[in-house]
Image (cartoon, rainbow, N blue to C red; front, side, top):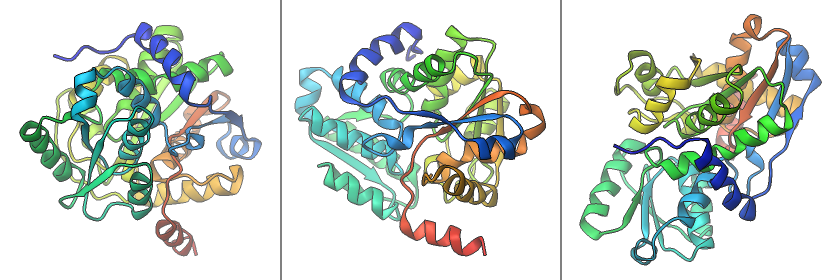
Length: 321
């Protein structure tokens, strides 16, 4: 069984991550605060060079590969941001990377992966089909397979943004974090429950792709439908290592609809002038559902990524009327 990273692992990861990546801003927005009835802050992981928080985990994991693993090359599956992270960090460490993507993956994310030097392998209708395919290739070809959630070093790496939140806002009351596979939420829980256990960590996933939510509720891994436009939330299976951490430490988990996510994208664009992808907007969508519970508190919304395609943005704007 994979070991769950602890706070010491995250602190070690930060020494590596800080050499390669910028500290991202934590900004308060009065208009969002007025809208939500709390003091609202946004953690801008969309400002990372690969456009999302995942690159933190990629940097730390890549730094810890053995020489043999680097020589063999790495392979992974992604809906986009994890693949961007692996391609970006593999180039920094001179490692060949193959990224398995669904056949209808976000074209902007596909282009970015190629620009970072990753080899794109399109397969199947969704993330899990691509994942199963690259897992088979890893067994056949000997690549170092990088799972998008069941990797202690990935979770330790992405947990570094939670350290920054606690340093910049020691009196934080609530952190709301989006969940696809759950590495980000697991990293936040690892840090917050070690350093400020009184703070709540609330996860959010799409109603149209609720596998992680249902797994957390049932305390066992389940599969479910995957019909959300928000790629970062789009998994039909839950991952064992993040779920073990969430089962132990997560305070609550909520679901938001496709329309609620689209509305949150526009609100973030209006009030922060930042473009959020669906997963990055989901925490605001959750906060709007939890307004009464959050009233008067210091609340951090994790804007996990900003890699929204132009085509999807046009759809969101068109649907808004």
